[in-house]
Length: 153
Image (tube, rainbow, N blue to C red; front, side, top):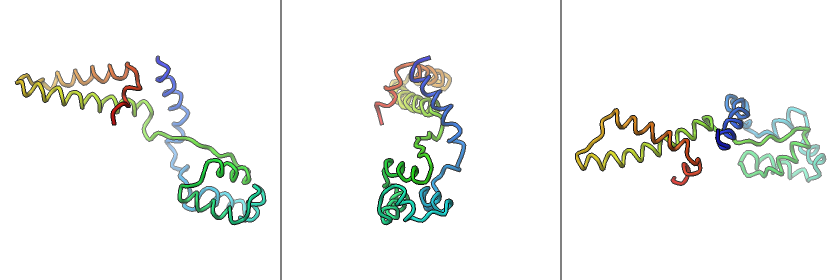
């Protein structure tokens, strides 16, 4: 098994529990506000714990909702709240499925071009031939260098 395949499998195993859970969706007023409120902590108290002005906490909570907060700032707030910031990209389908889907799209595009040309020359492929060629192309793409899957938009 190639290094990229091993990396995909390892990441998929680690990320599967996160993919299956909608519980990690950011609360409507943000994680900082949700945790702070649950702890019964004021903005002033959190500000003091992380060494900033109270107004900075209000701005931080708004920035989190807007999606403009930095990871560094979230990490500071998490520490002040006695929490750990967890940062991850969670693929919607598995990474293997993303790679397979990409290979299938490329194969379909290539087959459409070939099929069109052959039809113009009155040498159209049968559905069975198209299906077999698609499977061969997908297999070749999956066993080749995975970086070439992403060269085109």
